[in-house]
Length: 374
Ligand SMILES: Nc1ncnc2c1ncn2[C@@H]1O[C@H](COP(=O)(O)OP(=O)(O)OP(=O)(O)O)[C@@H](O)[C@H]1O
Ligand SMILES: [Mg+2]
Image 1 (spheres, rainbow, N blue to C red):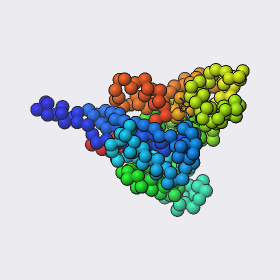
Image 2 (cartoon, rainbow, N blue to C red):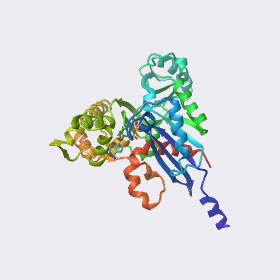
Image 3 (cartoon, protein in one colour):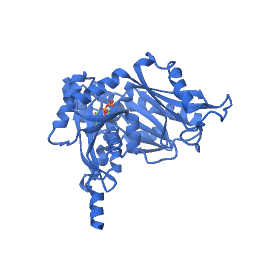
Image 4 (cartoon, rainbow, N blue to C red):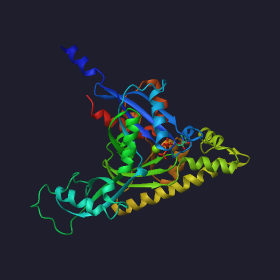
């Protein structure tokens, strides 16, 4: 009998796939669950540059047909060996609109009615063209997720307000992703803005506020999360591609060589008497000083210190970046470790730590889909 049960418990669940279509590459992570733990089955990355006549690592802005082609290629890729269609997809933060609005304290039902009306003021297109989602930001450190009285009857004073995070996605965006799913014969049951995927994969029930910096190829995204709740989000229109561009320009080398140099040397070294650090700093200083302003503004507004800065995204793989970040932020800086939440063969430990930050979104999506299968 004991044997029967332990076999039953250790049988792996169905496999699921998390998909992150970034501007420079597609990332996929396949997981299953065994003995209650997420297990890494396979993962891989496909550079999109070549689909746009560009080099590996370069950012792109591809038409949907090319994306579908790339997704299909990746699913067929023997080396990655993806074996499931069950998936979820991340939607880029840049395709979404997020605003925090102040609402008078009212019941959940009233908010359901009032939030779309209020959101009209912030959404630059007709509200019928977007899909809205929203949740209440807890008021103080000790309050529950939903501080709204369940029913009318608990009268609120007119001065009581709640902060509501409203997320809007254009219906065209949703349809684009539906198209990708259908034409790639995938079985997706949700689309999720990448922020929430990253939060799921890299956070660990931190109590104090954390600033997550996702440095991608084209953009850098900043999220402040407190007690698992997203409090503030920003996008900076600079990413790791800017570093490559600056290296190429300053050193008079091709983008391909610049990309290679960036990955090889990080911020170290010197070429023809020019310090690489000085070139890289143009982009890093811009991003980190913007981030610092956001961090300081948050600390001032809520009177709470950001306890640590967490770096994710391919751009954060730049050698030496953590030291530059530490200098800028004067607080603890750590690399996100999304694979830390999954069981993987020991021999992969080092490589998963190094490449992990780039897969934060894809792991987070896969973890969500995994929650829904047996
Ligand atoms: N080892 C490395 N050192 C330095 N930079 C790296 C390294 N590995 C990847 N990158 C850079 O990271 C960027 C890709 O990061 P990532 O995959 O997170 O971006 P993306 O998700 O495609 O883009 P975005 O989020 O902006 O749409 C590229 O600019 C690439 O050059
Ligand atoms: Mg990305």
